[in-house]
Every structure is written in structure tokens, then in C-alpha cells.
Image (tube, rainbow, N blue to C red; front, side, top):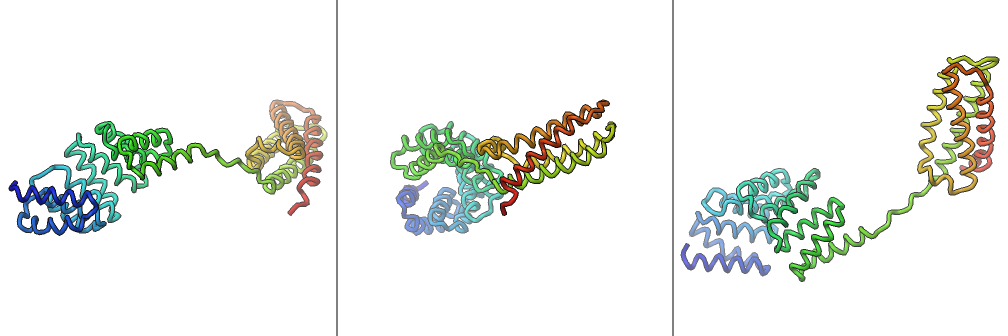
Length: 316
């Protein structure tokens, strides 16, 4: 490499790093025109285009570098980032994986893979693994830990995210993005989940339906079981119990039902009615002939149904 060429490449790298990618492009274009087989120059040009958000031009330059003899993974990384900016996420992932394959010991390849997988709906786990591997390969690089924090944040792994962002800030105290993301992680980590609210209207409707099933079904069972019930009646009451279970699922969360006194009494009576009916059904299938448990179940349902009517049956 001639000395003037080396100087141009170094100057272009400095301009891009200092936020002047347009000047870097103006410097590199004459160089690639005069040296079209210079792979590093094409890569520098692609990087400058990426910084300007010119993904199409960056991709073209990266492709030119791919077919030349040069750094094996750098053009693939640049192409992956350009493809990601263009919304071609599957192709970006392919290019990033190829960069890893070509240079598995380069932490930057894993960082790029994690970045492009972040835009894939099913790439969160692989992105996290790639970022974690990058941080292990480069424990002194703030960028590796910043990307690891981002990947952990997307997976709601608050502990890993906080550790990664703290490490990134320690390595680069001027890293404003990591500081902002660390604050976000701490806020989400300390936030308490909103208390579950009881939908009283839905609860009263479910209780009304449950009481109607137990009262009406129990009355039919009483009539059908006179004067002496048979095991066949157990199939009917078993189906009745199953319907009650389906309706009772609408009462969740169950632990909140006992927060209100009237609800607690009503639910207890209807639950007792259903449990007695269940026990009597099982006994009936095994040959029991008594009707007393069914009568007790029906009476509990009647009292519970009356409380339902008084407590919530008239509300609209």
C-alpha cells in the first residue's frame, strides 16, 4: 500500500469517526476510482455511507469489497447493516452469520449479528447469545456491553441488562445511550405490577348463571329422583356440575371474591351447593339412594341465589 493511499484511508476513518462522513466520501471516491481493487477503501466508503443513512450506496460498496482480497469479515458486516437498514432482515442475518463464520474470533461480527437479529421477531434469543459472546470476546469494549444490554432489555432480563449497561458506562463514561437505557431498566425493574381488579359486573352475572343452574338443575334432579334415585341420574347431575365449573371459571381471580363480605357469603353458599352436589353425584354412581344431600345442595343454592338477586341481580 502506497503512503498516500494509507494517509487517505486514515484521514477518511478520522472524518467518519468525528461525524463528518460526507467529507470522508468525497475523499474516498477518487481513491476507489483510481484503485478499484482496493478492498479497504471500498469498506471505508461503505461505512461512511452507512453513517449518512445511505444504505443502498453502502450495500453497493460492501459488495464491491466482497469480491476482492481483503479483510474477510468486514464487507459482510457492512452488508448486513446496510441490508438491515433497507428492511431486508433475513438477508441481513445471512450476511451477519457469514461474517461470524469467516472470522469467529472477531467480537464485532457477533455485535453486528445481534444488531440485525434485533429486528427479527424470532431472533431475540440468538441476538442475546451473540451479544453475550461478543462481551466475552471483548471484555474491554463498551459497544459489546451496550448491545448485550439492548438484547437483554428486549428479553426483559433486567438483571443482565443492568449489569451490561453499568459495565458499558464504566468502560465509556460518555455513553449517554447506556445511561438512558440503564435508567429505563431500573424503572421497569422497580415498577410494581398493577393490582388485579375485580370485574364486579361479570362476577354478578356469573353468580346469577351459577345460581340458576344449581336451583333449576337441582329441582329437576329432585323431581327425577323421587321416590328413589338411580345411578342414571348421576349422569345428569354430573353434567350439571361440569356446567357449573365452566361458569365458575368466569369468577377469577378467586382470591378477590372474598374481599367483599356479600360476595364472600354468596360464593360460599353456591360453592357449598356445588360441592355437595358433586359428592352426591359420585355417591349416586356407586349405588347410593339417599336424597338428603341433594335437598341440602338445593337449599344452599336457593339462599345463595336470593343473595345474588339482592346484591347484584337488579343492577344493569
